[in-house]
Image (cartoon, rainbow, N blue to C red; front, side):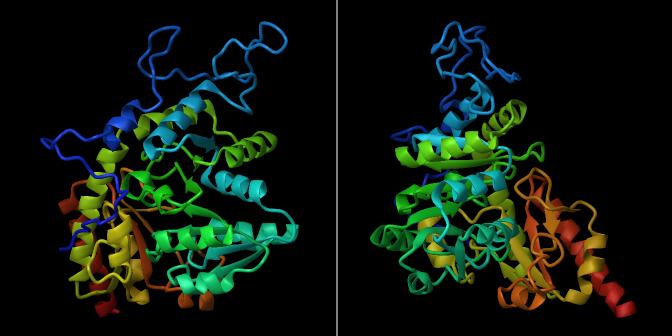
Length: 413
């Protein structure tokens, strides 16, 4: 069993009990307190749910709230509290919350691109991002080159005079491929290209991206941030004032702000994010090791394993391996294996308390032609596992019995 030992100078360590007090608050402390204050009207420790469409204004040009809230399509106190918490945890001044992760990505593209612009994106990416760039923004005159972003030289070769945005996710969904953020950040700086990182799989707790040159961190808060399968949501974080103002304008114009109740649920989930990530990571490493040693598993993809192609880079930029992994089995066994699972749920989500399994070939990446999927490593035997918070032994036992059942079924056939 191999664990990542990070050499990343800007990593936020998982603080262990009994250790010396940190120079600044730990992620767990920030997750609870950053940007959070008792409600001035009632003293409530928890941020109230401001379930309102509009706000009274005492006179022209005046607002009753310190945040200047006038209409919840543009801003809302509960949403602002979530944004303050996200920004504080990441160590940047600005965050914006959205209805979904795709709403956040859409806003980023609308805010930064125009007809004639060019984007470089990872060829292995969340299917929704691919659809946006390939099927929607192409109609608006925006071109995109999908590149193996684990090869920095390939990214450099794809740059064009009109390239405006470099958009990557690492580890990639669903192959867990790892790209070198520092190298890509340096390249983006040299070429004057906006660098955005989808950090949904790890969040800033495990993988701080701004110290590697990122201008924008993209999160689907539906996943680990909220962590309980209760909401959909997204966020954009940035340290660029002008970019923040542009993103805020586009969000208001398109009406994609997160709803107050969803923001409140996400804020509540954030309080335990670092603690949950510790358990997700610990279990995922044990499960990846188990699968790696199982005779019926053909390959395991997890950055925390020493034999992962991106392990060395991950050790520099991640503080842990994360709670996501993928593995391959015989495609002929996939249906029986999934059907035999008892604890693990087949679903299109990740980062939740429940262990979830996804079959990318017919679910998240179904719209990619089979030949292209196979070239990218998304084979008909690939399964993505979001390791939950159940006891690690119970998760392994469920995978073990399902593998055994699928093997018996094939032998009998």
